[in-house]
Each structure stands twice: as structure tokens, then as C-alpha cells.
Image (cartoon, rainbow, N blue to C red; front, side, top):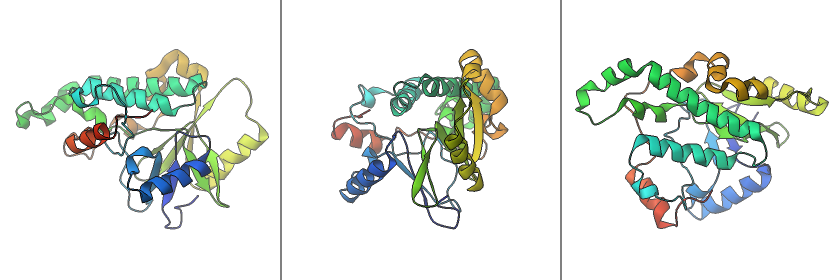
Length: 247
């Protein structure tokens, strides 16, 4: 995996064509338009956890972006944006996104009193649900680079600050030999693979993820000083100025 020996890890996501996505990203970044590309660059030795409040997001053409001032509306905008990055016809990917946001909401509800107490000194400036944006950010259809200049497609990926975690959504059919080989390449490259059964995900949603994801996923506010938001005024103004969010 690129990045294993000190090189940045460059991950296209929301695409089935990583080579084209990378080329487009390079062109647009050269033109100063970084927000319109679905590429994440990670220095594996020095990049903190990738969270929902980390951008950039391509929020062009999103209706009402400038007036979305409450946490729940903004969280829904991100959820809708992530759905748009999934494969249109892969139901399990969309199910994972919905289940993951249910998982976030469940963690917040379970820890409501403690989270509210951490914000008590700020005179109502923050609400406990603002911590939602500290949850790890999923990268739907992440294309993970491996040795030889190729990519391995995943259903979703997360960067925890220590490791790259790939979500592999499994169905009733046994994975093909080529798919098993791809996953083995990822494992040898240091990627942690979590296999999630699509049927269990559809049945139990957030509860299934609670039993599947590492504990740190559900304690996403740990290590954060205060809640942060990806909807900072400058970011909203920039996206609205160029025509809104293009999904």
C-alpha cells in the first residue's frame, strides 16, 4: 500500500474509475478547485483521524446550504452527500451509510448526559449533538492504492489516525477467487478489513454495527477538545458562490 513507507496515501473515493478520478483531481487542484474532487491524501505517519468535520466536501448545488444552521439538518446533508458517493444500484452500500448514522445517533443518545456536561461552561454555545461531526468520516467506494500502481475497490473506508479500515460488505455468495486475492493484498499492506454481512446490516442496522466496529468508533468525541463543524462560514460561502453542491 502506498503510504506504508512514508509516502502519502492518496485515496480516490465515490468512484469506480480511480485512474480517471486521480487525473481529474490533479487538474482541478492545479486550477485551484480542490473542493470539487473526491480525493483524500493521508500522511500515514502524521495524519489525525479523518472525521466528519474534516473537509473538503463538494457541497456545490446543495439546496439551502447557506440556511442549514441546525446540527440535524447539516448532519442530514452529509448523509445525503455520502449516499450520492455510493454505487446507485448497490443497496448494501446505502444501507451501511444509514446504519452508520444510526450508530452515531445511538452513541450520542447513550452518552447524552456526559456529553452535555462537557459543554456546560460554554453557556449554550454548543449542543451535545454537535459532537456528531467528530465521528469518523466514511469514504464510500474508496479505491485503495497498492503496490504496482493499481487500486483495490472497497465498499467503504475509514482512517482512524493509526490505521486504514476497509469495510467489505458480503452477501450470500462466496467471494470470487480474484476478490479474495484483492483482500489478501490489502491485508498484507496493513489495511484492516471488517467484513459486514449485508443481511445482518439490513436486519439490525446500527445495533449490528455496534457489535462489529471497534470501540473507538462509538467514542468518537474522545481526544476532541470541542465540537467542530464542516459547515464553517467560509466553506459555505465558497460552495454557494460556485453554484452549490454537485452530487
